[in-house]
Amino acid sequence: MRSITTLLMLSSSVSTTPPPLPKHTLPTTNPKQPSKQSKPPPPPSSSSSSNSHSHRPPLLSTVRWGEHRQSHNRINYYAELASKLVEDGRFEDVFMIVETVTSGGGSSALKPVEFAALLNSELVSKGILSVIESDGGVRNLIKVLTGFQKLGIGGAGAVEVFLSDRSVMGAIGRESMKILKCGGVEEVVDLMETLSGFHISIEDVVEPIEVIRNCVNKRNPHAAIRYSGLCTHSDEIFCTAIHEFGKRGDMASALTVFEASKHNLGCVNMYAYRTIIDVCGLCCDHLQSRSIYEELSAQNINPNLYVFNSLMNVNASDLSYTMNIYKHMQNVGVTPDMASYNILLKSCCLAARVDLAQEIYSEVECMESTGSLKLDVFTYSTMIKVFADARMWEMGLGMKQKMLEAGVTPNAVTWSSLISACAKAGFPV
Image 1 (cartoon, helix red, strand yellow):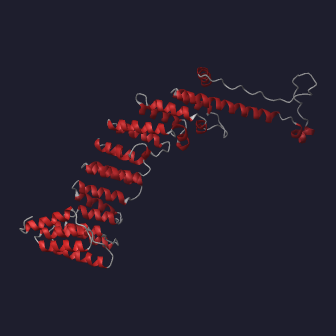
Image 2 (cartoon, one colour):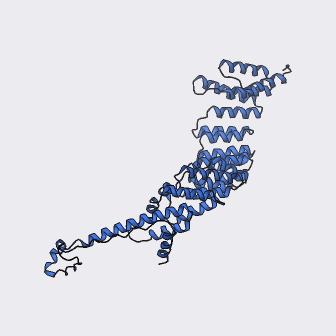
């Protein structure tokens, strides 16, 4: 009773006249007789029950048609009323209308999403924009969208009504960026969480890297985890977060995000393992990289080539460990690529093992002759550095000649190594 009374009050406050209720069309008597309502026919006797349907006037079907038309007009009226209330920002009144109109039972009752589809999208967009532009816009927007979700208006169907306008999404994106610049990353993540309930690709609202970097600046791995889990390409965003924390030297936060990614993705993601191992290198924590690798081994999971390469690269200062990983990689059937051999040469260089470096180089050179591999600028530059550090300047210059004959252009590292070789040999540079 209270809801009906309130609806009537709302109706009077908006310049919209409710539609007249249609009159039921009842059967009439002969037109020549005075216009007096005829009495309904007496109930049929038991002897004529078999023919009762064929002789009964169409009173029931006519009344039902009238009721359907009345219901249709009533719903359209309240949809128009709700649209104008949204434009005016009177969302609490709108919630009450939705709840009242869709509260009827039965399978034929109007669903909240169906009622939402009848709203005027232009008026709704104006109302949503006014919320965004108000004081505390994002918080108010979250409250409004959450209110609609509680009424059962959510998902892709509701997007067409509330969030399909480009101006609305653009305003949400701009407001989110303002909040991020002020350090309010938690508030933005709250908004993204709400928007995801409407099946929106939140990566299109704000650039993911902007949100992640703000999480890193605040040293807030939990906000990064929440946000990453909402994204369509969550595996990529998780890895971005892990790497960004690593670049800041925040190993603890990177590991927190990594552990959360395993639970969120529900599978072994080699890209995430490679990223966290690379982060171990950025944070100079090669022992942690070994623990992560041992975790995979304990589950009888063989890493892919890229994980093996990252593991060897992080541990390049330990030639013995690097060579063991290289041999294990071959034993489990993972074929090394040019990056693998470059890392081995780097490890030999750091260990001052010229003999082993030459042995590996000869092996790679042989593989190049068969077309299996192609030596690149890193290979030649590393070998030149190996010879330069060993004061073998002639071998270094010979490697440079091979490089040019192979059509590989020297880079800054190449020239630096050559200059170093000459300087150590006592030649003027």
